[in-house]
Length: 77
Image 1 (tube, rainbow, N blue to C red):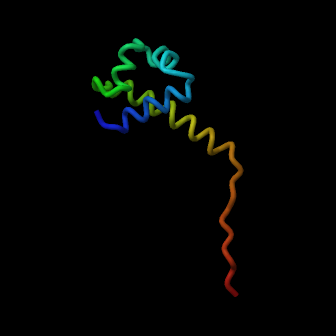
Image 2 (cartoon, rainbow, N blue to C red):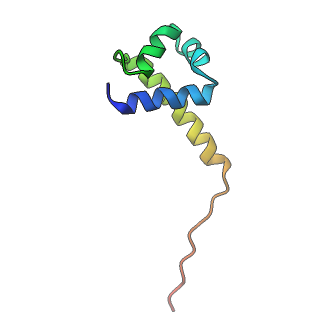
Image 3 (cartoon, rainbow, N blue to C red):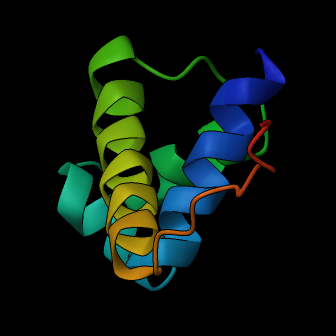
């Protein structure tokens, strides 16, 4: 299984509070999630995409809560 899927599942579990909670959120058994996280079975696309949504939503929230800084460039005269 591609490492991207494994990393995404691990990150989603970290964000949501652990593998048990992620399995519940995704509507899958903890044993299936454990197999996918350990690359012992292929993650269904629908499950992977829901995990991507968790990670993206979290990252977007983090970005929007940080102050925006504009790179200042010296003005040329």
